[in-house]
Image (cartoon, rainbow, N blue to C red; front, side):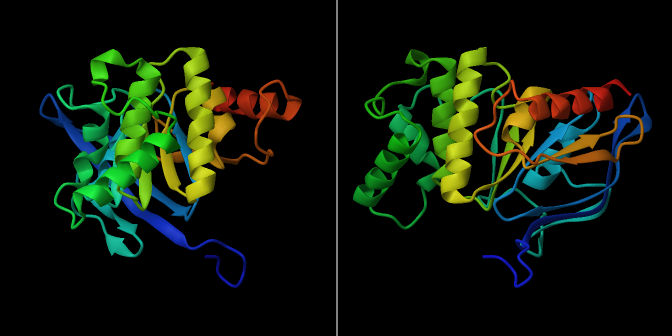
Amino acid sequence: MMAANGIRPALLEIVGLSHTFCHNGAAEAVLRDISLVLRQGELVCLIGRSGCGKSTLLKIVAGFLAPIQGRCLLEGRPISRPGPDRCVVFQEDALFPWLTVRENIAFGLRGRKMSAQSQAVEVDRYLDLVGLQGYGDHLPRTLSGGMKQRVALARVLILSPAILLMDEPFGALDAQTRDDMQDLLLDLSRERRQTILFVTHDVQEAVTIADRVLLIDRDTGGIGEELQIELDRPRNRTNEQFQRYCARLHQWLRK
């Protein structure tokens, strides 16, 4: 739903957030005074040099870490702990190796008031959604890396999270499989109007999938730059404007 002015409502608000780690007995600042807003249905990428705090920010939004200062609000409510309204997909698929594909996807539904038949119908729907029809009874060890990430994606999407947090989820995949997974993510994002906060080192990936790209500056610990990607989808990587966006992000990262 959009507001009367045509702007989508704020889903995630981060206000004045700072975080430090203790290293060799000394406090080391990682994030400083981060403020940002994600709106319903947006796909926002975080980029930055190694050690800038991208994954730390994702963990704070997930509720795995408490910030030293500032606050995170999801739909106006403070985030204080992990919850099913915020689901994380990591670079490693983190599937349970002893469970089948179907059982992995259904795992998050345990404890919900759903009949076994209703759960089976939901699992079948998400198997179909991520293109894994016929693989429900397979164990993870029999799957390729891309297929495992499809299972990991289905396992969190079935929970209908308000926001999906993705920490370099396609970084370990080969180039073609990564392209396929980016296409799948964009299809799912469009169909479900899923809000996504996505960490990546890959400039092309950021320009391919993002509505906005935010650079976390390792030197200041804050958001150094913001870039709105104004390209129609699907995006052509050989397009001149696409390449200009990539060049701009590379320039930021070299500063």
